[in-house]
Image 1 (cartoon, one colour):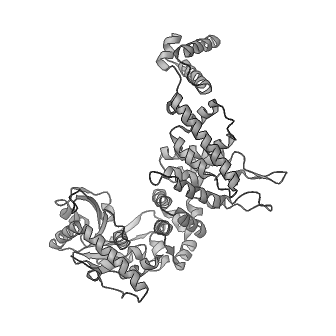
Image 2 (image 1 turned 30 degrees about the vertical axis):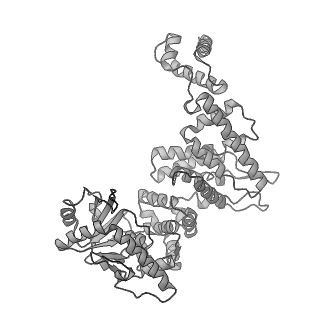
Image 3 (image 1 turned 60 degrees about the horizontal axis):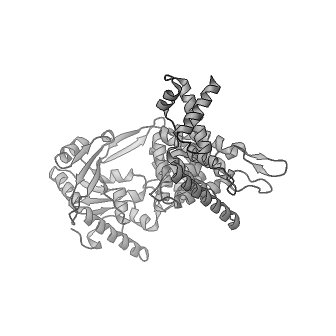
Length: 501
């Protein structure tokens, strides 16, 4: 077992001189600490592969994260064993095994292992046979071919910081492409030429943006150039893979960094063209703010309001809330610029784009609804809304109310401190009114004072369309006047029924 940084042997490139040497020493010490933590599981598994005549190495993101001091319980391994051999080795050992990725040479498993303190720790493990894969220019699926060595496997990986391995159980560091130095420089490069890498798997262009956003790394100039010249190549990748990569970018700590790279290289034009379309030409009098930069700022401000971790629904709504503006921009006679009904147009555009990217129906519905409602608060003014209007605001937001609060607050990007303060105070007032009404009237479950069965009993009718009409009428009364009570509701229902008759 290693006990200091010298025990992690680097078998390839020599370490650079100071000051980069100091940086490499730091990341190696981190790696040793992380590897010590997972050694009980990793070494046990490696011994089983060795006894079966195969090699095993921790690889890719697991090595990168170990060097960054952030290795979790998801471990990636690579091996010369074929998938059927991997299954034979792990089935007697693992607590659960799955074969979802076996067509691509990957076997997954879970291993429960107590840590030194005795508390349970689940390791989610993926073991992939050495491989190389390339895309046919007309195919959406990679053609998988198994490799014969770890060097063959590493050269096909997306970036040098993901092309490092630690051979087990010896813990020999394998770094044929200088990934450790790039990690110390916090730079993304490809093992081979970017053109070859992106031709093999065009999704790697989006991964460059995602890793930049996730890790805060810069992207090498030749990688950016290849992304720009090959942007249309992303078109052969399935919508589901593009969506998943976009989600990881959006849920990262610095999504602005990744989004600007997508837009700057032209990739966004092929993935989510509504975002670069926000870069409206400014009118000669600069009467409207930069919608693109505004949207990125709203996204960042929404992230600051998250209180339970990254919220994909909120982040998508913040990014897309103004995508209807380019289609609705008008130059008025007095020199002003208007975007009338851009929230309605934007909601429809959001639904169309998210559906094309194969998002779930529920997520499409929620994000589109937030986009549609994001301007509603601006009719509140200085508190002139009636209680009825407040009830309708809550009713229309439904379970999205908390997110709508955050989106609305995030949408204020003015540099005018007086204006920003007034908007904040106005929304504080609205939230206070909502809280009072919720306490008094149970706004979270706004419904009529009579349910369907009670309506039929009062009217003496059987189920039919009239019950829905009566229910809607009572709901409108509830929204307008608050709770009526059963007796008053019955009187109003009978009065309505007499008018209908």
